[in-house]
Amino acid sequence: MRIRVKLTFIYSIITVAILLFFASVIYYSSHKSREEEFYTALEQEAITKANLFFIAQVDSTVLQTIYRSNIEVINEVEVAIYDPYFNLLYHDAEDIDHVKETPAMIDQIIEEGNIRFYQNDWQVIGVHYKYGDDSYVITATSYDIYGYSKLADLKRTILMVFIFSIVIIVITGYYFSRKAFSPVRRMINKVEKISASSLDLRVYSPNNKDELALLADTFNNMLDRLESSFNAQKEFVSNISHELRTPLTAIITELDLALNNEKDAGEYKEVISNALSDARRISTFSANLLDFAKAGYDPREIHFEIVRCDEIILEAVHSVTRLFNSFNVDLRYDDTLNSSSEELLVYGNNYLLKTAFEKIIENGCKYSEDNKCEVVLRHDGKTVFIDIIDKGAGIDEKDIENIFTPFFRGSNHSLAEGSGIGLPLAQRIINLHNGTIVVESTINKGSLFIVSIPLVTS
Ligand code: ADP
Image 1 (spheres, rainbow, N blue to C red):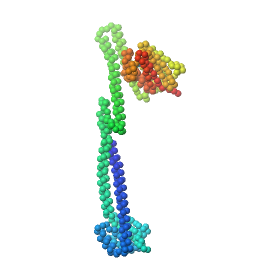
Image 2: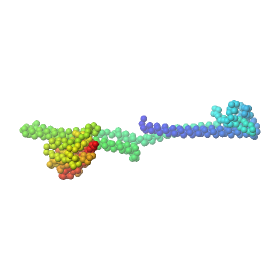
Image 3: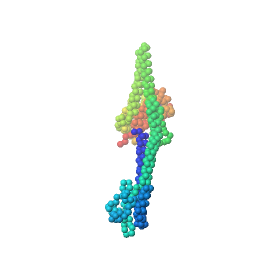
């Protein structure tokens, strides 16, 4: 069942229940007050007739004549007077005789002083009446024709108002729930139109800042994030294909030329060497991509353990200098370390951390004319800091904010080969280790990359 229908239903049920309760209370209290008023009237009539009979000594036949003539026009009260021994002293109309008195009833009236009960729909009272030293029992009965008809009128009115109210309640309930949910319907219609190819669409957000507007805003914010992530993915894929296509086209062109033109051994060697260097570029690039993907995994899927950060940096330095013979890295331990063999333990993944340091150290060397950089290790007891310092080209101020964006290459890119994936990869890895990378750079003076990772303290 739809929420709208459900709400209308619940709202109607509750309102109808309240109405029903009020209607019942009104009807019941009217019924009770009619009953009470009529008993009182019966009692007054009984006493009045007894007074006429005993005190005013009005003749029985007069009283009976009055009764018989009134009965035609109004609902006259039928009165009977007995002595305590069940001897009938007076009766308005013995031939009609609505109340069938019994000795037990007479005894009960004497004992209780006053009784009230129904005989069919006729109300009956019994009163213990005292006149001088003698006591008598009076019974009086009548049918409250006006009271019942007023009650029936009230019942009819209540029923009509009740039915009318139900109709109004259901219609207004449905109308207002429809109105309240119309933004939701608009949202649903819009969401149905949103697909991967139309991520620029946004759902309708009502102006008032209610829960629905909040929901729409949250949804739109999510779409913003999705859209930018989709665009980033698209850009990522096109960057990758571009990075792969350039060296592949170079390899194909060179090999084609070599195949179609006679060359001497030296020229063939040069062609092979060029093709090999392009193939290596592709290989490095794909290895970087793979690492980038690994660093993008959920941290729970990466194997973390307590590792020695100082050892990892040493390994990274060795692997960079082994790969690039011309690179020179000076590794130094700051005074904060007691000895060069002090263990700097961090919680991390050996392979990923080594890759991150390799990328930053490699950059330090490759963007410096002298291919040199310095790595300084220090700590403050809680965090290990690794400073990678070079006196190279430096980074343009406007480039600094983008250097961690995948495939971004700064204005100094012509100084060295690259694909713009080294620093984003390093940052992802360091972030996975709850660390940070801070950059300070001055153009033509050099750069300082400060990597900080929390230490494992015992
Ligand atoms: P690349 O493959 O281009 O080196 P990176 O992601 O490693 O890609 O670096 C992004 C950009 O940051 C580089 O293109 C370069 O402009 C700049 N950069 C990074 N490290 C340095 C550095 N040590 N000195 C100067 N520029 C640097």
